[in-house]
Image (cartoon, rainbow, N blue to C red; front, side, top):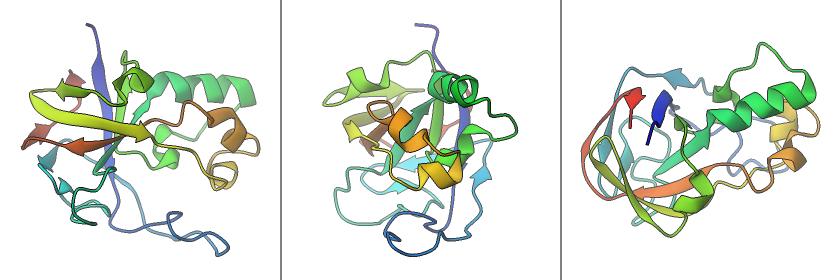
Length: 155
């Protein structure tokens, strides 16, 4: 498999999650050179770290191919994949195929739990129509099953 981690993002707070009917938050998202994955807890420093016991979204994955397709579809430039607020941006992985499956990335074990479904905020964060266009390809939510350090690079 010629798959890669292209980017890693975390944010200390929620801009969209739990804010339906309100204004978006203003928490910055940071791109990291590495992140510590802690089994059962999440990504160190991220807003979902220790969110709740056995949380199904301890890490989120998003395909860079989806971002590229949306940029082409809507003629968008100047907005990177971080606007979708997913943690781990991959290339060459079939993320929907990992739902219900245990898998490894750089020796760290994950369990794919469900699609990271897009929300209406995507129209504000990326462009009008993004919410609908992302249905079925919003990424992957996963539990972390083993500790390790994740870095951009080959999977």
